[in-house]
Amino acid sequence: MRMLKFARVDYMKCRRFGFILILFPALSAIMMIVEPDSPVLFSITYCLFAGIILSSFPFNMESREERGFVQMLPARPGELVWGHYAFGLLVLLATFLLGIASLMIARIFVPSIRLFSMDGEDLRPLYPAVLGIAVVFVGLQNLLFTVLRFENAHLAQIFRIVPAFVFFFGMSNGYKESMSFPDLLNGLPGVGILAVCFAVFLLLGCVSSFISIRKWE
Image 1 (spheres, rainbow, N blue to C red):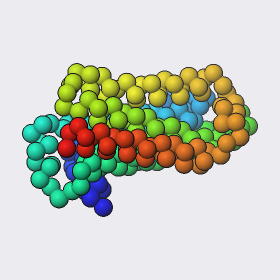
Image 2: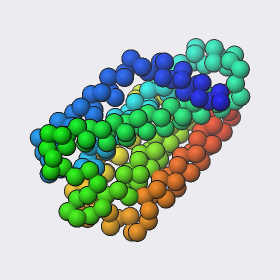
Image 3: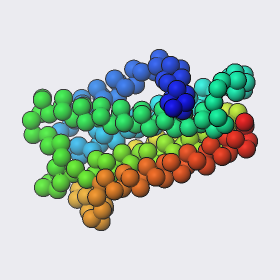
Image 4: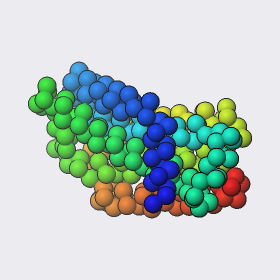
């Protein structure tokens, strides 16, 4: 699919920032080793925080000059935006898996760390739920970038970090406020929440594509 080719272009442009994919999981593992009583989902949230920031780079690296070149490529209107969405989704999946890997590494040094339980509560449904929430944040972030595209660089720079910090501090406060955090799911399966969030992500992608076609292409 052509949008995956655009996602690959985003990767080529952003690969010099690949150290983020190593730095944040490494810091996450160190923090869990130093503070093994911290909620294990904090590591996943920390890595997804990095993923949300990294997913914003393709929009921030666009320019009006580049737009003229892109418009000459064999692609349908709106596919460049869909490429940004695909890139963001792939980055989140990568950081999510790296977050789990950081927990496994930390557990080598601190065997008492439990990956899927906390105070007797089963955390497995929360993993896909947290990923789903991050996916929605990336969708909303990309929608904001689509609206502000080429128009307000300073405001775009602000939105480059605001969604990630809102996600990170919102989820972190949720872990602190409720040590029985699974109760917040109200019995809903984590995979079901992920599916709903992914549907919202696709809807936001459709809206962004429509705006891009009407306003910029």
